[in-house]
Length: 331
Image (cartoon, rainbow, N blue to C red; front, side, top):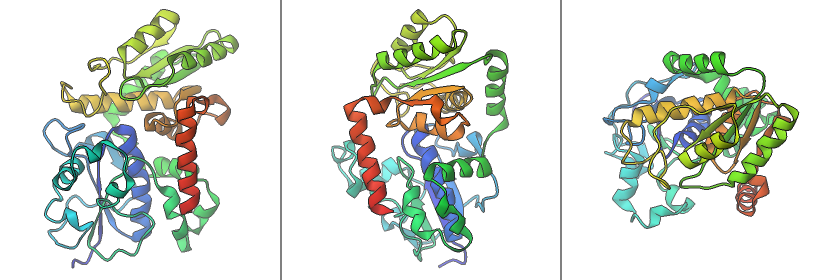
């Protein structure tokens, strides 16, 4: 056993997923008095398996560690002697690829820290997730953290972003330049995911049109992973902005794509789109996609100006209901 305790946060899946997992990991590290180490050296956004997290973000007012000690006191124990591996590498060491195609909580639970517990004695805890699990921490909001009891989960996450996380200045500068040069009058932000997941393109167009009826001079800012969606929007709207990015072959996802020529740049492009969405006056997004959820968390957009398109599809309603039931059951 070592004198200090650590929380090693691994990256998994796309930018929205790992962003959300990071936020409540920061809170968990504070609740448990552990030093946090964020490791995004997996193959999704790193070209050479170096840790790209510090190239994207700075952490503030958080006890950090640049490296972790050599110890066998690790939880989950399957991570012993594998701390330098990615989540996918560890999962595939024990599970079949077919089992990993599905969102199976029973499988994931074997490879990550349970956020409902803060009594682990191990020196190093491994944490990764696709989503935020702030609701699991509520039972531990006592003492110095009792004030969090009265705050909603969204408010807590917004607070973590504001106080503990900032973009690297070079990325922030790109976003500021775009906002200063292009974001005039009213800006309608739309995130349309249309590769590995598909939402109704026409539904987005309907909402954009309704807002344009009120604000006809508005700029439409489109964040999408599909060139066909971009083409559709450009044909329909003249005052439109889409950032330059690499698009994969039709139907393939932007992240975790072996054809991507520059994975790090892919991550930068994702962050630019997320933060530009957060600077808009309106946000049209699908709550079942974490990309739009993160943009909403970062933003100060009034609730009345945010439109969740998943509320208008049966699939989205089912996913939102499952998430609500899970949260209420745990909390």
